[in-house]
Length: 168
Length: 168
Image 1 (cartoon, chains in turn cyan, brown):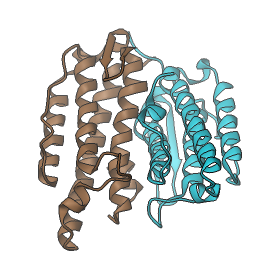
Image 2: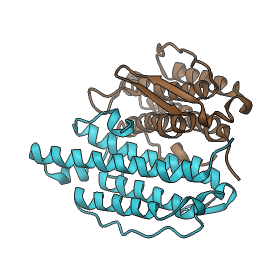
Image 3: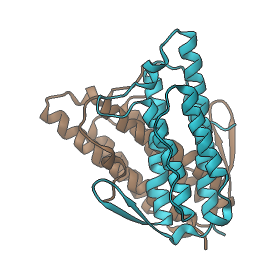
């Protein structure tokens, strides 16, 4: 027995992007109810040189669509980082999920040995498809989803671990 | 082509536990250098009802050893949550890695369809081995490693994304 690459990637990104979107719903409702300026949450950071909530959501989207595209052997679609407000962030998540849904298993399965290069400002990272997914894409994706959660928790949003990982 | 369960689990937990240990080294050195009481970091939380740093590290350990044990079809070893100080937390991480290293591929591979039950205080979660790893163990593991990182960043430790995910 063994596992196919599709089942390790697209459904996982899809599930946790959906949960992130639901967390943003709760944040938007909380802000309205408590008369909190949404920007107070969207621009919140855990430290001055860390990214704010909006950027954390954009990066979660980027790591998901980047993983899906590169495993499928194509260039990731560019989404401009222009979202203002919870609704636009949720729309970006929807667009990301639509992109994921458009890549079928046939394009991802078998990608575990595909050579993948990621150019960062400082260096070029070279991975097999499997390393790229398990050591780069998923950890970075969960890093940004968790940090978005942490920013909102730190700012008093009453959510819990189930909002992040619970089964629905 | 396809992927075996071992390569999706043990090496990933091992790698990110090792990185978490290195982050704790940096935190301990920083505390010493800046004359910060280590407890000010170890007991730090992002919100009063969130777990402090020490507990985040213990939980990262728990999700790693719990995943490895359950995929191998055994009960997870119980580690008492008694660590005080960076050295003891690092020792717990070492014990966790030693446990992981003792489970060879033969015991994990083929576990993708193993039926796994997790009893929480509120309910029983039922998974296939693959769901357990990809939808529960890895997300929870990365959640706690990231939150440990976020607590330290929030408290001024000069670390960066490379400490979390960089290749070494």
